[in-house]
Image (cartoon, rainbow, N blue to C red):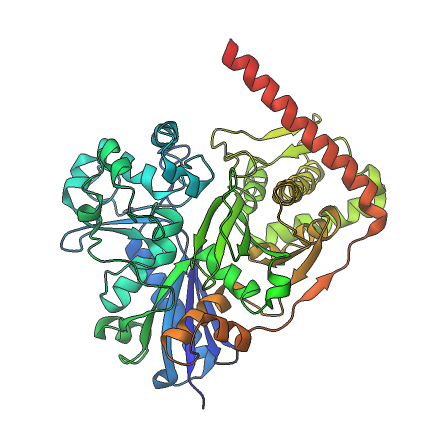
Length: 526
């Protein structure tokens, strides 16, 4: 039997693992929940040990489901959210809470506690900000690190390892503290194409000159898919894999998704295509042969996923998270069953009411700030047209229009990229939104471009499997792995009869943006 690989994806709410054949077929899959602690508004934390146990459980279950012998799994690789794991010099957890019994040692990617620090970094107007579209987001690591040093000096003084979650998982797996080029360039301000890869003068001005020491970064990062070593005996035993299994340098989850859906495209299609990696948040990922910085777009980052290409990321901080929030506002738990029940009722109501269904209800989805096209982490959401109705059907109407707001926000991002010279005509979708029929319909009908669904069941995991396949020596490089492991996607055809209604909704959407900006200006003057 040809060698196989294992891929692990840690998202906001779960750790997922899959075993893939060298040709890209998924042989076994498993998922384990991951807990998130929200001690204050805008704060979110994980327990890295609980994440590791979830990873181990998922890998063992996926391997069992695949029926592939452990010795035939040549390599494993990890992708994860850009959450920040903080450990002591001897590896002990350093929880964020002052409670000695707490275990929440990881600041989740969506945590906005460092908003003030992000604003301060933006105000420096340092050239390094060009890497993040001119505005520092509290979802990046520098503001969180600055918050940690200033607000929790007790933790900072004891820190010996601080890393992105994907790097931490590789470290736990094989013991290598070498970081991935993907994580450091996209989230830490590292830029290998600059004269000084680290922005030393900016770090000094912020009081972070000891960052590399506290984070335990002692060497340049490894290119994505570099073999960092083999599994340690403890990790191998826990996962049920062979100790000879190699561990590849991983990547941030959105970049794994981009690799999974764009990596196999020919050059003639790649320039006109982007990936929409859509789950708790959404990211529009575009690859280009030459760098082109854009306002409110993160990047471009060379070799962050696709070798030799510059990847840019324009996103929404809350998309799936917004829909969960809408469900919670009505006192329901945002489970898959609840979302499915709402979608079924929305279909029935639309069939009965036609174009009049919730037609006066409109939603701006920026409940957790706006990444693109404005780069405003202070932005707030807007709901226009609520009646005095708290019924389940009222929830369904709000949910449907929140879905519409998410889709129109992506349309706004695509329009902004096109206006800046990006010739996009296709979006390749990966992530949890593939399972939401309402969002998939809206993406096809409300966006003025082709929507391509991958044939792979788990395209984010597939991208990470490509990384593992290169680390394990199965394929010579990522382009070769992508060509061997992907299949052409399916194109969704828009309903042209719906175009006029969505064009009207988009005009309202843009007007709501203008009105929000005017109201914010009045408040500032007041």
